[in-house]
Image 1 (cartoon, rainbow, N blue to C red):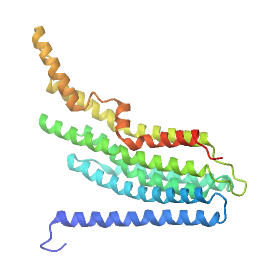
Image 2: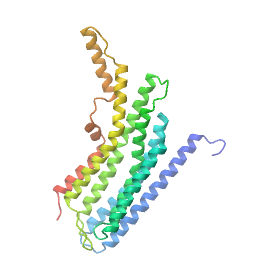
Image 3: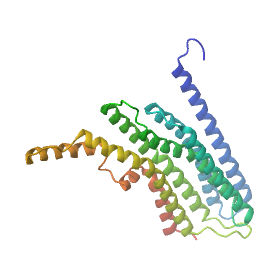
Image 4: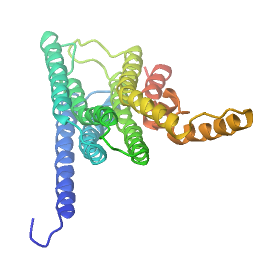
Length: 295
């Protein structure tokens, strides 16, 4: 950084450079997988589905890279609201990714004909891409619980609203990854198996989409529970019901209902998931594959 350069400008420049780097990495991974798939099926009668799967594989790889960068930025946003100890959260995330990689590699080594290395590579890449978003969500939970001493009520409300907005905003990226993965698996179901491998069935695609959606819901439930607990505490502080006469109590209840809506306590878990539109992609993709077959 030069003497005349603002720190914020340098940070933004580094952020853009990192984004370009991860997108290029995602494109490289997707290109390798797509090209190898096309080469392995050269002259195949289902060429159209090969092209479709390759395109989805490339999109999934690039999207995973973008989601990875998004998660890093949202973690920074959480830290701007409240201080969070990221070390334990990131260590747990790395351990989880390591377990997934070991399981995927073990599956490939145990059954070389029944499992595609390309599918496993994309799965691992998508898991790695989603890790930073999961860490950011866990960071929200930690931030909600880490209320600094002497924090005013107004500051608590502002922190809560910012953290809730960050959490809800992380749903669509995770949903997009599961949706693209499900679409790719659905396209793979239309391809003729190579070298005696077991074909991908429509029921497999459906289960994959439902399982992916459930996992996203489980991850989201962690910060959501902490946020709703904080919201209830704020509700009691902002709109207490202490009146002794019926008219006073009714007025306080009306005010309490308005505060509930402002704090988002009227929102349901399913409603939150549906608000992240891409979260519906896995189920739609799986249902479409199940109902519309080309073979």
